Image 1 (cartoon, rainbow, N blue to C red):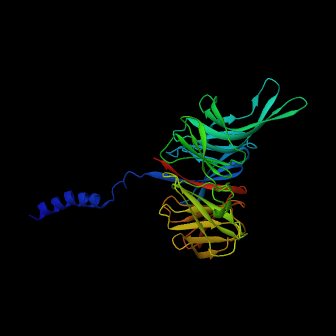
Image 2 (spheres, helix red, strand yellow):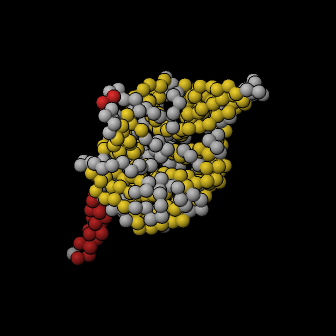
Image 3 (cartoon, rainbow, N blue to C red):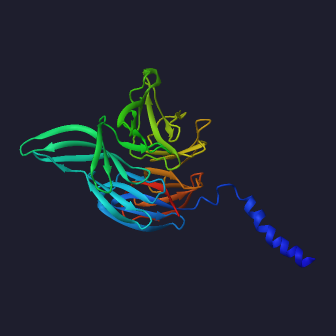
Length: 356
């Protein structure tokens, strides 16, 4: 009898354990990596150690970083804003380089990229370019455009004129046919029609009473579905406020909050996917309660200014990098737990889930 009970327990116990696991938990298997834009290299960090997992050499400082939905392919802008590097993020190696300069009948088409994104499936890239034609004794300015590039053939497929000041291209979540185009204002690019339309005025609001918004869109977030940006606003009466603007990349909903204190200037922000707290960085670190719009925790970076802030894949830790040669892991009360010295000064950091 006892033997039968033991056999029954051995059979039933694993079923009880499995039934206690939340639905979908077993399916979420990924490797977390932090990609940091360095000078002449893409620095790949394993944050669990933490340690440098790889250093991928490129020409010049790294700017934009974007990734496919599975995290297995990344697109990186470097080489004086002239080249897009396609990187296998599993093997940490460059698999393609697309140089966007081109020849014309009369000279060289000099282009600079100020915003780029890889398509969710990794087959195409999109880049906002300013461009001009260098001739023997003259320079002719061409309209700025967003161009579509086939990454296999490197062929330019289509293009559309876009407003000067565009700085970030970002795909709508779960929608491979819509690009959010962030500049002085927010536009939306319908990739089926290759048509650009104004979505929301930021620097040029529809109602002047809403205030003129200015933001430093060098550090787009959104890996967790929330694109978050520090926001300065100036009102017609001369009042200036500082706060945060963020977008749900799936619904396209935009929200803002304004702090209850004098502006100090922040470079980047990250909002958690539950929209409970935000974290900002530059010369100070803030933790912001979104519901109350209050700064509930304030700290100072240990070694000077830090440009970039992000959340770990499980949103349990806060990561910092940018400006100096360091990667910092802090808890959500802004207490530093670990620091890692990097081989170069840096600009920003992206947290990527690489599917297994």
